[in-house]
Every structure is written in C-alpha cells, then in structure tokens.
Image (cartoon, rainbow, N blue to C red; front, side, top):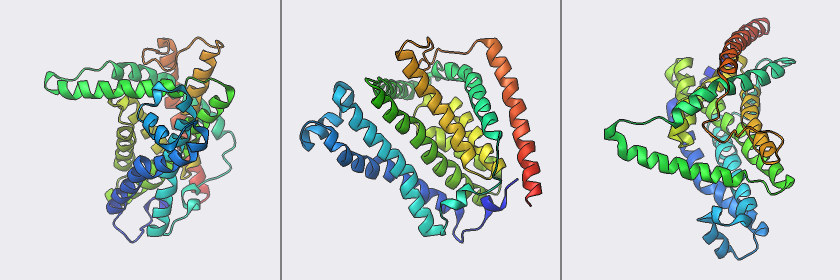
Amino acid sequence: MIVSNLTENSGKHPLVMATLTLLVAGIGFLLVGPLIGFFISTPFFDGTILEQAEKMADPMSHEEFRVPLYLMQGCATLIGLAVLPIIFTFGAERKGLNYFFGGVKNYGIMFLLLLILTIAFMATNSVLISWNANLHFPDFMNGFETWARNYESKAEALTKFMTQFESGGEFLLAFVVIAIFPAVSEELLFRGMLQRQLHQGLGNIHVAIWTSAILFSAFHLQFFGFVPRLLLGGLFGYLYYWSGNLWMPIFAHFVNNGFSVVMIYLNQKGVVDMDVESTDTVAPWPAVVASAFLVIALLYYFKLFFDRKNQIHG
C-alpha cells in the first residue's frame, strides 16, 4: 500500500492542519465562493444587482435564476472546497497538486472495473438510502427530527429545482456543477487533505478514513441520507488509501453523481422510467444481493491489485 505519501510529516501538527483546512474550506464554501459566483452570474441575470440579491434569497420561485444558481454553486464548490484549501495547503505544507496524484499509474482496465464497482455499490446502497430516509428518532429527539426533516425537504426542493432542465445547455452546465466539480473538489478536500492529515495525526488509517467519511457525510447536512453517504465516503477513502492516487476516488465520485444527473435527464425526456431522485426507489432484491457480492469481490480484487502493484514499484 502507499503509506509514504499519506504519512509524510509536514512539520506542523496534523490535527491542527486538519482543523484549519476545514475552517478555510468552510469560509470558502459559505462566503468567498458564493460571493465570487454571485458577481460572475450577474451578466446572466436580467435585472439589477439588488434585484438579483433579493431573488437569491428564494431562487426556487424564479425560474430565470437557475443558471445563476448553477454558477454560484459551482464557484462555491470549486473555489471553496478546492482552490482555497489547495492554496492554504501549499502555503502551510509546500505541497502542490502532484502530491495528491502520486502512486501507481497505468491502471488500464481498473477504471472500467471501478465504473462497475461504483454502479454496483449504488444499487446496494439504495436499500440504505430508503431505510435512512424513513428513519425516526426517539421521542426526546423530536425537535431535532422536525428541524432535520424540514432542512431535508428544503434541500430536496432545491435539488429538484436545479435538475429541472429546460434545455440541453442547462443539463450540460448542471452536469459540470453537480457531477464534475464536487467529484474533484470534495475528494481533494476530504480524501487528499483531511484523510491524510488525520492519518498523520491519529496514526490509524482506518480511523482516519472513517473520520473523514463522517465529516464528508456531515458536510452535506442531510441527516436522512447520512448513513449511505458515510459508506460512500468510506469507499472513496479506501480507494485512495489502496491506490495512493486521488484519481481513483474522483472517478468513483464522478460516476456516482454523474449517473444520477444523466438518469434524471433521461427520465425527464421519457427515455427511462426510473426516478433516481425518489428515496423510495430501491433496486430489486435479487439485484441488491448480486450487487453486494459483486462489490465485495471487486473491493477484494482492488486491494490485491494495488498491494501487488505497490510491492513491484517499491
């Protein structure tokens, strides 16, 4: 396994670095990125800046705000979760982008197998998605459950608004913002930076992977999708740890998000009859069981493959 790239001492306390990296990402995602996106989206909005700011408070009531919302979301994701943390990491640790994309190269057919693995994982995970969406908390947590469900409903409504494609151009823009930007940015942050820093600070890669996965799932603030997203984060974490190359979890993340966006678009066009946005959409049980066995087999193969490759390359 690639260990040297993940445990190299930066000269600063890794847990402090992880905390600061999260802080930089939070400020970038919530403030800096959206602000830059707001001004970039201004030419695409037919009105004054004040009118744009007013409608931004309730974008779902204004169909014409969909493209500006794509641009703002894209900037928040790319600048907040990737650009600013990269700048911070380079300044604090003197590590450039090449540091995150090392490890064994020339994967060949591995990306095809990773495509199959990710889709099989999604089919297996559909059971947990349905279970988590219908989960009820104990009575003493009624207040939290009410708040969480209200927040979840707003998030679902916003997602539906962003995926109501009025044209092929909107679909392509949404595909970039929903599938490509998060795959690159979130994997750089949660796996490339935080998982590595947590591994250095805690000394246990498995604790680091699952702590990073918890942070990854919690970041989305969708508690009724927390468990399936946690497992997805764990999958991405092990792919990065075994391969030592961030392109592996980035590709898996891209397939997960991109498959959903494409299926939504095809459903709207009447090409397919599957509603992937519904948490009640569960793969048939024979498919779930077969997918689960396929996931286990492929994960075992991936681990053996990268173990052998890393031994060969020293």
